[in-house]
Image (tube, rainbow, N blue to C red; front, side, top):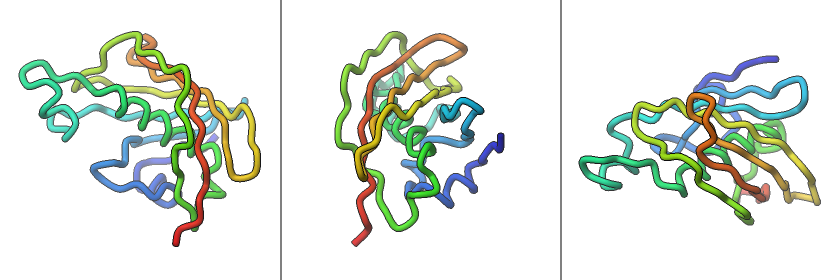
Length: 142
């Protein structure tokens, strides 16, 4: 099992700061992808959501999970963009705040051509914060 750091992740994912939202990733022996990201105090998405009581927006939590899902097919990404095709059954169970270390677990459930169907969860300190089914496509860059 090899752990990728942020610079190594950049070799696979097309995302860059401030939208690169995983800092460490690996695929375990069962084929699940795991990612980690420390939510910083000055994140663009926390500054206005909500001033004085910052909360990580749900859509950002989904993006963190999606980037971790992309690690499942990291060797196929070159020359493609990873684009959402669907987000289903997403549930938010606990609040995520600046200072939290989020950890994701993502599994590939099915594949049809360039479409990938995944299940993902996002935890903080072992506590479930978000989960759902994510579908993405690998679309050739133009």
